[in-house]
Length: 371
Image (cartoon, rainbow, N blue to C red; front, side, top):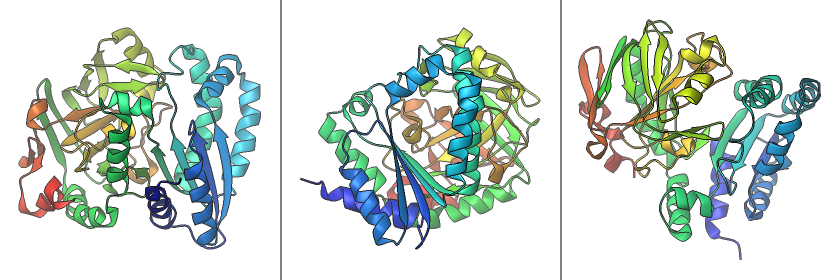
């Protein structure tokens, strides 16, 4: 029996998130998703909107096997094939699941870098910059375990978060976008954190259900060489299948000059991937009222109520500080009291304290006003 929430979810994705128009092509990638009812719902909604669905089914364990033996020549062929397909698409959806979030943790670094740089990055850049796209996770027992809940409780949480009224959130974000676009200096303060940087003349971009589900962030980027001070992230983070905790980064004139964590050696290997990996490509403020705890899934964690993320690596073209890297690593600092508290200052004015906005023009983004 089909879960009735799936139709609402699929309708929101097709009609709101990617705003599919008659005659448009959409590529839908189902990655590790075992329940195909959502796939069928999406196909039905695409046809109802007058669009043309193209479906790709992938499995993370199969991708790992491909990575372990892949060659540059092979990836160039695969890149050319998938680029040609992506260039025919006006929209893109990726729904990702899987039983093991660390499936690729034992792929050697040189193999991972080859896969990302020679194949994945060009295709992602085409998709990000030239299609209407949205990516999301899909609930399973593994995600419920990471969230310390039962599978049924996590499914209820998932649909509550994902079927939020994102059009209401979009309106509430307008004041924050306007304020960020007028701001020069930002200062972040928290336990183990005192960081300053400029966001002058770099656009602020609202994210309210059009690129990620769940969603709830406004992002920009720091002026590349403006970052100074230290930040200590209090949410665990996973990158290329490896888990990190207590990441501390120290900056001088934009560059990460010191980095420590529970796995300092691997952390620095990633930050040495290329020159841009030691500079920041994104600064964002998270506001989703239903997401309260980290669960090692960045599509959820970067939207946590009362959080920020500060991202080593590549900048997005729509909030561009010119930094380029094959790395884009969202790391999260939560500033609510139960995580140690913290403040955000814009041009020396306190705008958020302990996770709550404290100036009248931003109060509509506090959680009770978004549900």
